[in-house]
Image (cartoon, rainbow over all chains, first blue to last red; front, top):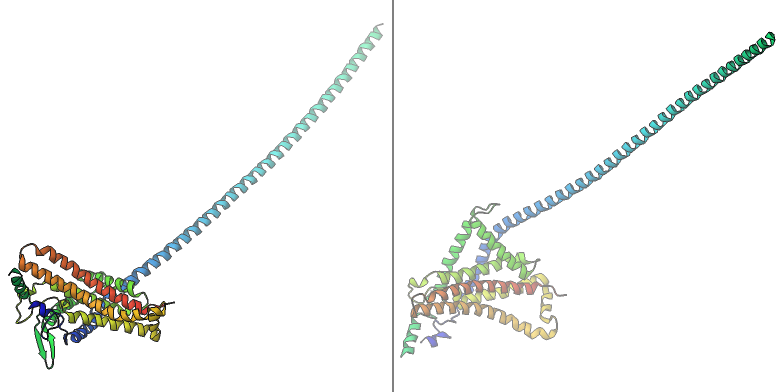
Length: 153
Length: 241
């Protein structure tokens, strides 16, 4: 019974093709439209909106990050230049003070030398004056002695 | 003797029996429509519940539906391509959902407990009319997709890469719906029959692994059907250079 019913019996059978086919096709097409408006469109909208939101946020965050990095680099170069500037000023000041110190030292040295020289000259003149006086006195004394000796004779 | 009784037992499974509805001159397989309406109704209720209150932070059912949507989008996008997958996603998704719900509904719900005057309720995809309807829709879709996307240049596909391919490509237009419909029909019907026979012969425990296998087959068949449909459409809209 089964074996004969399997294929192509007028009534029933596994391969009994009838109006079920086009009606089922229409049903599936209708289901496509229903599911599109009920499921695919709304869910798609919300999922794609979220994906857009997330990707926008990621892009924004990336932009901000790059901006921060740029600012950081900027700051670093500024810091670097400030540092070199400071170093320059410090070394300049050091040079200046060194120069001033040297100048002052030279001035003081010169002054000291001059006063030393003056003192030396003074001492020398006084020495020579004293010597002159001494030799004059010695001359006087010797003349006196000579005179006395001569007079006693 | 045993063989005879087995045959009568098989007959008790009522293979190839239908519940006929007569409307005017046309005859319909009533059991197919009954089960499909119940299952599609359940699907629509499920989907409307899940999409009733959609939020940006998905909760509960919305999560599941979004996962499903994503799954279908990936399927359509990989097979059809970035350019036109949006147009065909609802169709591919409907095919997938319809076949999946039909297969699983047929396997999970104990339809046999509901007695009909003739035939019995079961997976709508175990009826050749349903599967041929689906397969013909796929054929129409890929023709439409090819023609609407490339116009008459669509027929370049038949002589691509060489004109030698022409007869094979024409033959393919017939084998595609044939293989689509018979693959689905055969798998689901065979699963129902195997489970039915096993339940009839050994009503305890033994059918359970086969039932699980049936669930697996059902899911795989839904995926295969949707993937192949998407692949055919993708093949039709693909640009040859």
